[in-house]
Image (spheres, rainbow, N blue to C red):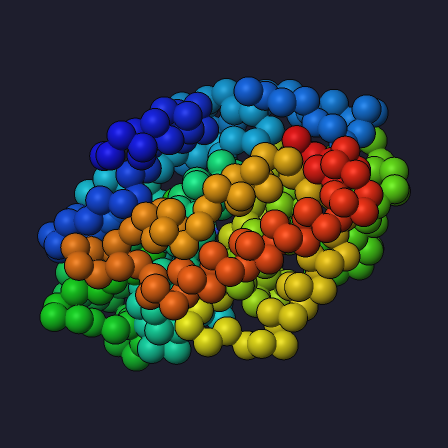
Length: 345
Ligand SMILES: Nc1ncnc2c1ncn2[C@@H]1O[C@H](COP(=O)(O)OP(=O)(O)O)[C@@H](O)[C@H]1O
Ligand SMILES: [Mg+2]
């Protein structure tokens, strides 16, 4: 672990029971291949959520704050699949039971969503660099293809999906492993009435109802984050989650982000959402200001030695969108003032 990564892990130590070293890469099969509480400015009537105790993936309960993930995961974990089934969604997703006893969502490289597993990992690495805790940990893992197929043979559906879709490279399968979030619920921000409500929270000059301020902050970060990552699939349904406390928004399903050729029309929707957002997180914007193409390349890192996670073209597009975000925010600061624009902590 580099010094910078170690510092970052220390900062996040309260957030992640085990720090995830997402950059280290090892070529080994079945070994991980990668891999102050500021008061809210939003609404005087909405105090920050108090710390809550929750259970982490069946482990001992830990105290977390409103902005912290509530589960433990460690990308240096070397456990292997010992059971699995298909989740039966639009992409290729399996739920795995690992030899450690932990459960995980596994998005392997697959024909109909080629390379998209990388989006999950890139989103997590970027979120860490921005200092936000809304993207579930996602780690590159390389499994032995025959061993994975044997485990999934317990289920006909999983077995067929694996045989038909999964891309095997020299006997190995690359993919993203994400801790299974027990008690995950969905926050249907794409549907009425929440859609209109949430947009109003993010518009200038409108009161945010008591108790909604921290959700509003996280909704604002979601808009900014998806704009940066070029995620065109956020609002197709069940891609915005809430942790079991109901207070922590989870940006799940990032495999439509960081694509080489994302659909332009959907990216324009992201831009329109951003244009309609007047209230931003001060910390998020400060984090974004620090990320140029060179830093981003280091943030995204490799998925295996000599195999950068993202192409330089994709990284440059992310850097370009970050500049665009910062320019939009600065124009809003010039028009409406800093307090109104950098409204959330
Ligand atoms: N880490 C996870 N913990 C719990 N449930 C998950 C997790 N990841 C995915 N799921 C479930 O699987 C579904 C499909 O996963 P998602 O990442 O949205 O893939 P897709 O690209 O197929 O939509 C989610 O809507 C959710 O119900
Ligand atoms: Mg989804």
